[in-house]
Image (cartoon, rainbow, N blue to C red; front, side, top):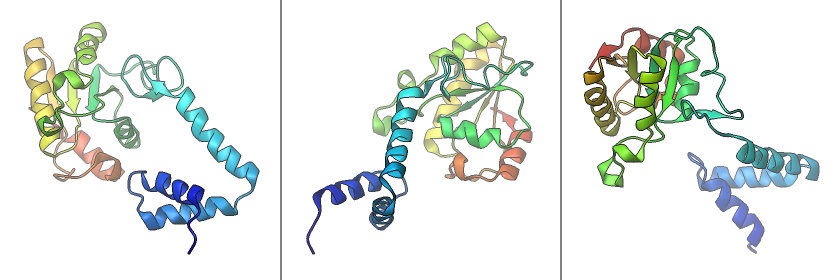
Length: 197
């Protein structure tokens, strides 16, 4: 079978997406080829627009198209910050609707195997926020894996001398799981039953 270079390049781009294997990438590429030129241009324009418009919130590090994200701009928030690894974790926890605090996105976790230390993630601005916003509690909601636990312990040790209560999501989120794939009931239970670390 003759290889079409631009089709192969398209398949390779799709297969570089997380969770997309070669066969799924081929299905995406073939589907795109059956669409009208206008639909394909709209698809490409949506990707370019998102990349050019969306950036990190200057307060919490979540994705936004404004200077401050809609969560940070909410009035009457509790003086509680939920610390997460990535913006997609904010989306997962926002589905719960039992939380009226704010978020702080680390953009990674401490991982010595990947040469990622505390200075490589968004921790310094968390310390600034605690002082400026009068934060009373920090919920560490990193994934329940080795790196997430190491990051939680580091943050707890850093914040305890400041008189801030540091809690961790309670059981309900299983070890090694990803927050983005956890259902809303489990996340709600985990938030309600969090414990101090």
